[in-house]
Image: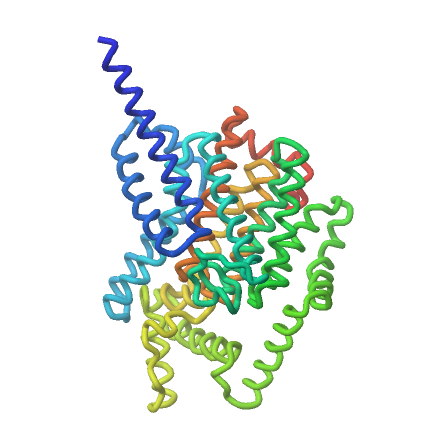
Length: 441
């Protein structure tokens, strides 16, 4: 009679091992190739379905969903894009493709369901950080012309991007620098703490020395400014307003690629103002943004539906110029600005929904211990800055990176607080008592 419980426990341990292995694969995949990311997401969906079918045996999973706001907002976002298929002006294949792209939001609740203890969350976080460290080493190796056989990016030899583009990896490097820096206090000993600091410096070197992506430079400046903000005593909080412009000046005069990037933006904007020049990077963006605003004004309540940006852009531009060459869905599927993209697809409510998602993440992070909260807030700030100049959540590689990084940090923070024995209310009260300046604003 005792054989059945033993066999049942063995099966549960095997299932738990498979579940944790897949979670770690997803956490590491955002530092690897798109193919690995895609495979890991499919396996994660299958595993999530099996866990949810277990019903009451997944009680710890439901606790994370019930006590955090981010999974709810992520699920609402996915559902809203699905519902917008009812009125989309886009061809069905483009609309379904857009819905699939925003399905990456479901990675966040999936990770919170599948990670069921602090130990499992620590494994996921370790694999995430390990993959980012490997990515940094690969980029530095390419920069110094060291052979990196696994580098599959078309920009590997010219822009030193390992798997994606210099734009994506510049942003990811800035985020990695912030996460390593803020989590250094969780290190088990002084040696590991100094390693985390060193990796943070190496990551910032990638941002400002290796990569030419201007968005990555801005994200790097933003997370650096936030780190200084957290480091300043409360009595100097007002002075922290001077940190971002000061950091901009220091970085501008310290790194040649940053200065070149900003001079290029100034020249492109001047050229676009003097005469219509859509060929430059800034010129393309300005034209996309202007037309996107016009599309939002036309349909401010419900937008034009999922995947409709190309259709609406072509329609408005052809009204202005019948000889306008229509964009294909594969050439430019977005306006390189996430907020405007949501406005075109879902109306003003879509923009508010994106802000609500950021607010939910911030509120959840406030309940967690300072290192995790600060690391998560840095990721959120990086996402906000990158969304101002790119459609970072729409794009595959960088969008998956942001969703997985937030999911892993939220899971670790939730289970760390849970392991301390405090309730949600107690966790919030305790966090409000600490010296975290951002929380006390």
